[in-house]
Length: 97
Image (cartoon, rainbow, N blue to C red; front, side, top):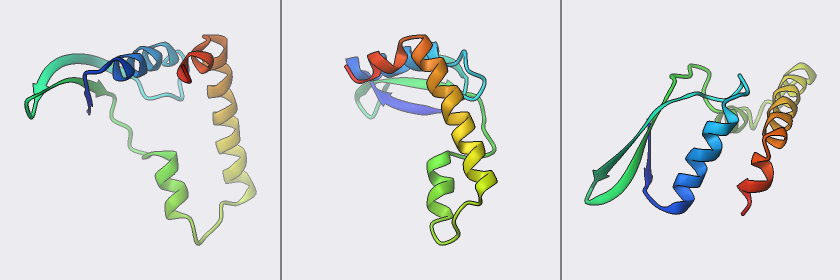
């Protein structure tokens, strides 16, 4: 679960994430709830459980031991598929607004 402050930027992030889940390589959002957490309005984003962890964390953990060519090719393949999916749904252009 992810807790985001309920601000326009967070709502836009959730909206774009929902559009991007057409790609099977993106964690799925199960539900979104509006709530108050610590006295602040927030969005509780419930996502599917992912056992593999985040790519950024994996790269950080391997800082001393570089990826081999196969590892890089897998990352690039998924990144390209994700980028293509998001670009075809115009998510990439909206992300930076």
